Length: 304
Image (cartoon, rainbow, N blue to C red):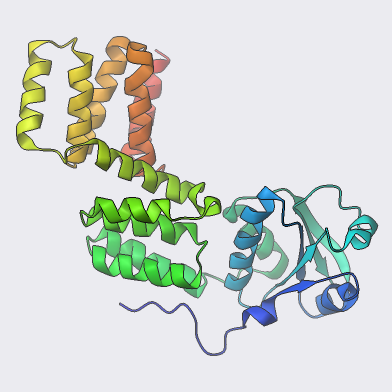
């Protein structure tokens, strides 16, 4: 299952993405937008949100496969142009079509909203080759083929080092194969802009849970069950049992034990059970059916 993340006939980065300045703005943006919509990203090297937004825009523009182009303007080096266009904060993004600004936004947006912005401007071009490769990897991981999934995620990261979905997927693939140490090393090596994304946050929670548990040893689980049976108010034993069950892939039972603590004493140990449950949710992901159902059950307990 070899993914294709580049191929003949595709527009190159030089065709789609370029840095420009005041002197070349008319040619690179105004004139170029007569042929294809041009997105202009106003940024600066010191701008933290810019470091998150620009890679995301670049990725979406590549995925649009020529339907739009991206021009990047460093406002520090082009202050006169920024003033003429009344750029008051960065990042600021303008979209030009037929020589005129037609849309825009200020601040860093999540990738999903950037895709909507680009699709509205240039039309829906379908999934990119990179997204298709990631879909392959996700499918392989779901089927338990950790090696294939890890290989694809690694290929994508070599081509796109800031691709958060690939980073989170690689960590999960390593973790699923039992290599907790490599999963932790991969996490620690990620750039801050990638580390703070939802994809990687969920993978980090999964690694922390794996480090927290002994791996769901049967003897340990049996011993903890006996402690809880002997004293149903032993919340620490029940919490330890939940963590051990989660490590043994008995996720639903683990959630049940935490919800039972919350039902009995939601404030126990500074809401330790609720906080642990939120870690479970983050590790499983927001769309996991167990997460969705458990959040509903948690709300019923908290608001009853």
